Length: 370
Image (cartoon, helix red, strand yellow):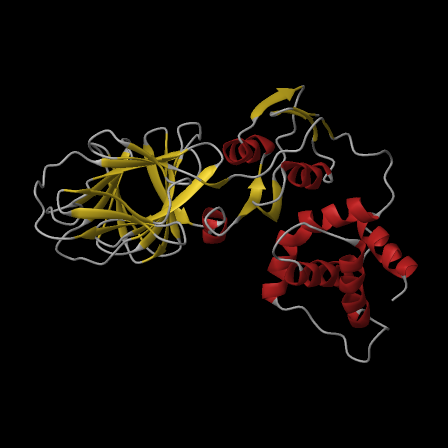
């Protein structure tokens, strides 16, 4: 397929002149071909175009019909394809994005605070034993994970708790004493006993966001308290987003079953694929976009009809930036998927390509412009 033919097809789409078949096929092919990020190059676009062109009416002996699943994917792909169009087609003017320096993404870093008050910088600590307390060894693996191992009789079941905290621009993974795996997002904190699993209930306190793969133990329920709610399980996989600067507290269930209870209030049970939302004191349950909820844990941002204010809150926690707004900013929802490990300029340029917002970057301050 010639470059001009490909550009013509994209231009036709951009101008709203594609037939429904052409539009759906174009979007669905792109969604399948490039589901991991928005890092578009002319070479990749040409490869996609060649595949699309072969399936368009008149260019192949058989026209492949798009099923319901691909048609649904095409809807999600719409905003991503818009980004391609803006990057590929001639621009009315150059990007408004200006910055004096680029900003690198966050990384694995956290502080472990022991019950005696000792603080350990986990990103600097060498692999091996970090501490030993009350019959428990705390180890850092070669891969950077923190694990606890019981080495004998536990001396004190009422021992004060340990705490692991990730800063803005940090994340960490750990295995709790009884085997539960936890992924902590940036600007988050988890408090738990070093003897967790030896008590009747396994209780931990969370601030921020974390994904849990709870070790199965029917005799010792696992409880995550955020202050505003409790999540009680026996063995399951779920995500909790409890940032104070978010308007709602969200609990998303990937596997198993959980009971979500408002502190001093009502309770709801979740099935896999459901999400509980605590907003203004009311708890509701609905279908979840599990991919979106777990995107951070899997290494990317996933925006699903998300406005720029919500997007910038995520970026501020991961890139350690100050965000300010200048003028009346659009509340239009955006969709897309992009790696969390790109410099911020690449994220902002992809957002700018939608022509919904513009940015100015000065040091670690990002101004969102109309």
